[in-house]
Amino acid sequence: MAISDIPIFSMLRTRMEWAQERQRVLAENVANSDTPNYRGRDLKAPKFEDPTQVTPATVSSVSLTRTESGHIGGMSLSGSAFRTEKGNYEVRPAGNSVNLEDEMMKVAANQMDYQAATALYTRSLSLIKIAIGKR
View (cartoon, rainbow, N blue to C red):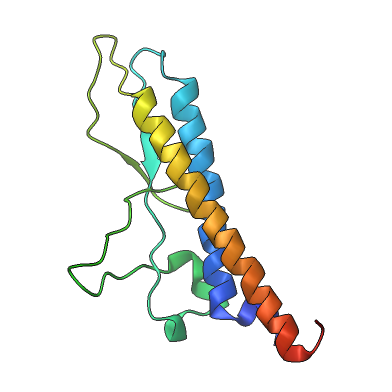
């Protein structure tokens, strides 16, 4: 069995790819913060269904399910393999809708999400190595 066949690795890899693409979109927003009529964009987060239903072929179409009302909902985002959405942003007189403070908060949250996914990926690999006796 290849490591790519293990659902947790597929989901973490998808999450990391999404975070990379979101970083690109957020950087475009910041770079165009003074461009007239530019509308800020963001990415919809990937959704992850029951891990037993996820196969490597369907990793790009997984989803996150909120099972209890007390759980914190994911952020609505998107990218190249992910859907882009235009938010309801305040528009300045020049027609630009990018708010630098909001964009920088999104960048920081995205960085933390990426770091969490990479840490989980690394720890999962370590567990596999322990299980096969390579550590």
